[in-house]
Image (cartoon, rainbow, N blue to C red; front, side, top):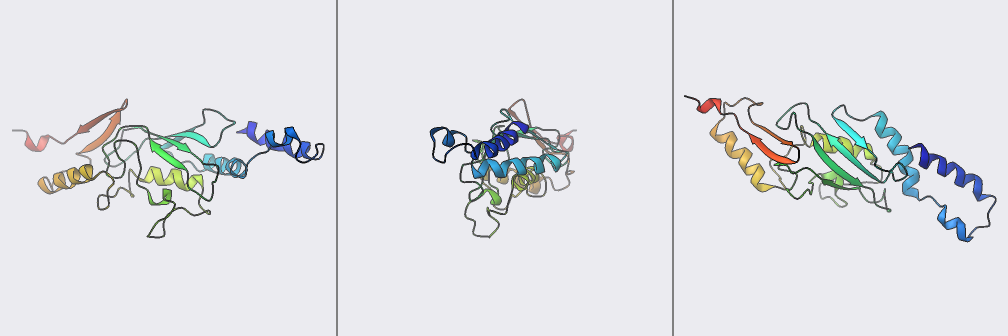
Length: 200
């Protein structure tokens, strides 16, 4: 993170020594997005949920990073799910682009990696979509919550996963909450069901 911050400081110092519009001037410009990201990444690192880990493959490119979410409760407990986050040049007028890299059986995540999370929508009917006042911290906390309180079976992206859950819920109402676990290990989708109810 310090590399981009030091580049910003260097650019500020160089501004006065170069004529505006010079050939090297454009190569040293730092976008508004990158200026915002320096502040937001520092805030994110200070407020990262304990179940999340962010990694930046290139510290000069804060607009591209990975997030690993390891839920400590619910259906997805003990799994680790990887997301790739790309922040477009038009940020913060548009939301970051997020894709789940781990194949998962989840009502709000398609098997191809698309994610249904209202704050990632540029235009949302319910008014909970993206707004310029939102930050990367909101995105990370939202992704983390997809495995707990934002798990939505009523308005799913993956209809089959939602129906599967609801069908199991109807056939085995006495099954304990931790009995059915959906999780992913080494990129392979595993579905572990509570079989003791059927044991002789």
